[in-house]
Structures are given as C-alpha cells and as structure tokens.
Image (cartoon, rainbow, N blue to C red; front, side, top):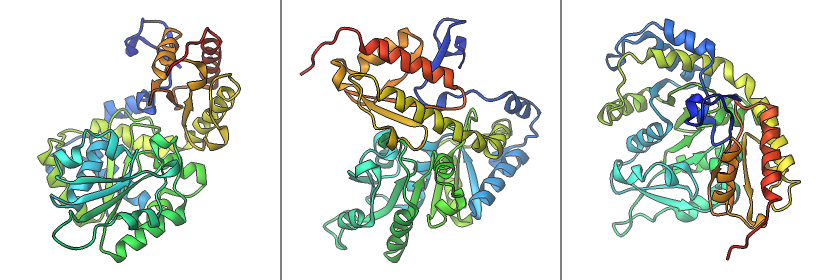
Length: 362
C-alpha cells in the first residue's frame, strides 16, 4: 500500500492497486542506485551499468549474452523477428501475451501469423503442437517458431511442468524449430517450484524476462540467448527505436531487482493464496485457491449478478484497483507494494459489493 498521488486518484487516499505487478514503485535503494549510476552511450555498447546488467542476467540464466530492452513486448517481438522470416507462423497458446496483448506486432512488424492453440491452464504439450505443424510444401505457410509462456498470465499464473517444456524443446529441435520463452514472470515460477531460472529455461533457444513486474524495477526487460542471436536482435532493437543512450540509470535499478527482488516473491505468492481463499468464501464468486500457485488470481463473478466491469468500478470507489479480463472475470495480481492488510481490504470490499442487490444478465 502507498499514497496514491501518483495514481491519478486523490492525493492522500490510500489505494490498494491489484491491477498488475507492473504498477510497482522502485525502492529507495533502486532510486539511489539510479542517481549514482555510471553511464555511457549504450547504442555504442559503452554504458558500463547496462553491460553489467546484461552480463549478470546472462550468467544467472546460463546464456552467452543478454540485451536490455525497454519492455517485455519488445523483447518478445525481437525474438520472433530474429528467429523467423516473413510469411511464417508462430505457434503459441491462444491466450498467450504474444497473441492477445502485443497489438499483433508479430504480424504487423515481424510478418508472421500466430498459430494459436487453446490449452487447459495455458499449458501446451508436444502432442498439441505437433498436430498444428504445417506440412512441407508451397500450399501452406511454414511453421517458423514455437513460443511458450511461463508463468502463463491469463491462465492465472500457471507454471509449465519442467518435463513438458523440455519435451517441447527437444522435439521441436529435432525438426530444426527454435523455441522462445516468454518468461515475463519466470522468477515467480522459479520460487514456486524451487528450481533455478537456469534449470527451468535451459532447453529454450531464447528467453525474455521482465524486470518491471514482480521484480519491481521501474523500466525494462531482458532478452537472452546465444551471442549470435543477441547480435542479430541488437540490429532489430535499433530498427524499432529501442536504442537507449545513457540507459545505465535504468539498468542500475534492474541490477538490484535481479539480485534482491526474487527473495520477496514468496510473500507475494502467500498473499495471492490468502486472497483467493478469502474470495472463495464470498457468495457469487468462483475461484479455486488450490490453483493459485504464483501471484495472479483470476476469479469468476457471474454468480453475483454483476459484470466484472461493474464490480471493478465499484471496487475503484473503495480505492481497490482491479481489472476485468472478460465479461465475468476479474484479475488481481499481488506484488511488493501490496501487504497482507491490503489483501484483507480487497476481500472485505468485494464481500460488501457482492452483498449489494443483484441484477441478472443474459
């Protein structure tokens, strides 16, 4: 919880912001590091703080190289652009971020078409993917890339079982197909299953992860892979306007986020489970707390007789911010700026709203 003058609500009003873990504020330590950062021109490869962040991220993930990018969406787009050529298809889960929330950039910029597959809990298997591979020939657009998302945002922060992800990578590689991981919240997956990010991602050809979500940095994501892959992606980053000059002021916060913030993620997961448990006791709300394994809670409000947008609007009046993801679905995301008291406020507010007179929707 924090004072909300920066939120566009009224100054001095305490707000519990559960819309996303992207709303986190940099810590005082991050702000200090940003102010004191040694900088240079990163487009020339001369920013020492950016170089340190890139090298450290590559080391943690066991990769040859890394590249600091302004956003996770750019990181995913750069991976798609680097691995594919125009006219190819990208296999992904239907609700994947690359398919639903990146403005069709894989088509508009990379010249590829998504080949989406609907999967329970957002988790693809090789059997599903294999059935969607295009046969060789000039009648069909050819498969150029497979991309997975771990954790899976719109499936409620679900985690890929390691054996499932590795089988997909191994079988794809047998067919000379690269596999990219949208690991925006891979550190959440890591702490939840007790395996290192290196182990969870070792079979992937490229990995993107966000510094600006659960890790709490103000800006930025990382793209990781082989030296050859990153060198090529650098060209496309510049082409897309992603060359940031004295970016060390941002990378300094990213370094702290990378080293320190994973330690706090278990608390976020505990708060999410507590939130889901509280919501499950409210009449009209449907959520299974056992399925909440990281920091994302998606719940159905159909039984309240109100839409997700209506309930989100009423929550806003109580200074609890959340977002509808469908007509009757609401997403809440716990993070370092929401404590247990904030979670309790959200539960109490929803309980009060759901006890109000209902209206029926067709």
